Amino acid sequence: MKVLETEFAIGFIRMATDGWNQGWHERNGGNLSYRIKKEEIDQVNEELNPGKWQAIGTEVKDLSGEYFLVTGSGKYFRNLEINPEDSMGIVEIDETGTNYRICWGLVNGGRPTSELPTHLMNHQVKKQTKGDDMRVIYHCHPANVIALTFVLPLKDQVFTRELWEMATECPVVFPDGIGVVPWMVPGGREIGEKTSELMKKYDVAIWAHHGMFVAGENFDMAFGLMHTVEKSAEILVKVMSMSKEKLQTIKPDEFRDLAREFKVTLPEKFLYEK
Ligand code: 2HA
Ligand code: ZN
Image 1: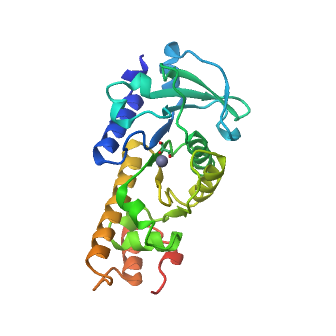
Image 2 (image 1 turned 180 degrees about the horizontal axis):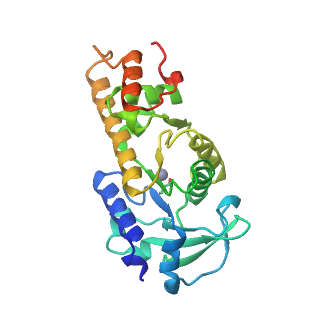
């Protein structure tokens, strides 16, 4: 089977195109990775053509032998659909978890995303904590979430609570909450460590003045989570633009009622009195 005929490649490209259409991927902004299942990589074995091992820049021992479909460094989401073999690639992780090699795609000498360390460290955390449930890590630059990082305190409690309040579905969609990473230099191990630390608790991490990372079971869940958080941020931006104070909102006890009814656990640290 050809890589481009597989369900995972088709889903990956569709998600990238949807993200582009949302306006979340100006120029070469954002990146996407998918941890490929054993049976899926076996399907495309004949098309794999491993290149040279190269350093990841961090260690992800628990991902040794795994294969990932990833977007390329400097590649534009806008082009993924029309030129997938140039814009994305399959990489394999070596036994030590410190090197990768390109096995398919990135045909014009491309490299995996500059955020490969963060993607892989997030995948490792999700594999450790959720087993095989989480396969998608997604990063983009959504305007409303980024705007909020200039006016809200950069605290998990504040972002989670403010965004929960903006739409009743939010606490049901991201009950564990949202982590916030202060401004840092992107593209390396350090920001990857900080982000993956938050991914132990949350499926969403906001990078101040930069963008957002989410983890999802599949493309629908990851895209839907990004979409929900960014929509909630858009409502909050509108509310804050209209008025300094909310005349009414969802109260802590109402969140507790919601949690009971929808059978989710909402950590009490987010239900503080204001
Ligand atoms: O350009 O989004 O964080 C890709 C990025 C880097
Ligand atoms: Zn970015």
